[in-house]
Length: 265
Image 1 (tube, one colour):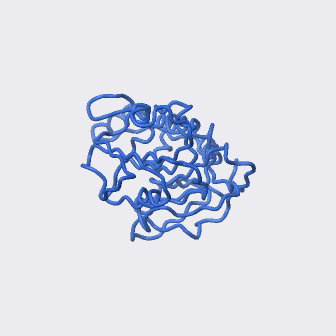
Image 2 (tube, rainbow, N blue to C red):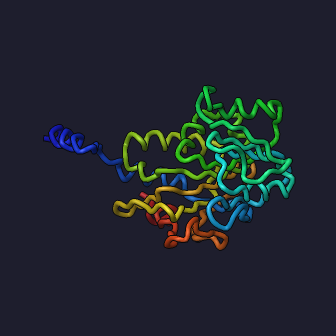
Image 3 (cartoon, helix red, strand yellow):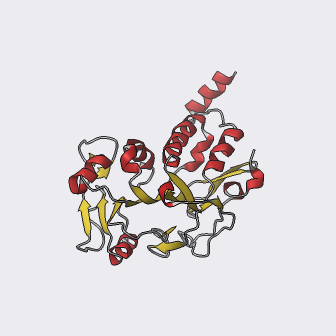
């Protein structure tokens, strides 16, 4: 009967799968709950999409890697005003919307291999600052390719980032067991070296809910390297006073399961 139902759905262009157990989802969400690391958050970038809350811990950082070039470069411009140069890459555009001597642009997508219009993160870094061992910052919004890119970054290079601001896409697919295994492995790789210090749902895309579990489809994560942290405590006040909606649509608050400890299983 199950196979017949699945075949019928396939004939309609649909495919059915089981659901990720709630216990597994809550276990991952618990690991991703934001921590107060004792460093104030500041807003870098625009007042809408493209602005991120990051720790006020940029002293000594010389380079930002910024794959995915939007219609604005407010984030990179503000970093440039602080003396931080940005390496930018995106095959879908001819360059950043503004030009500054602190910007270096490659007309390439960042991916899992060096081919055609793609290059790996390691190739990108080695092209410009091969022997640079100082801390870096990452700002990434690449429409779902972030999982592929993060898997492919060698651990020593990943650990070079002091701060990472990343928009993760299609997070509602965590309800699918196969996708959950991929996404959770990606997050586990990051969590070896980083604490989550802020979460902000993109209000332009909505959320999917099942019981106490509500997952925004798109969400901005800010990570701080554990090397910069001496103590942590749960961050339980949301939204942050500097949070701003990504779009003029209805405000979307961070669901309680992402920060309320009483939901832990």
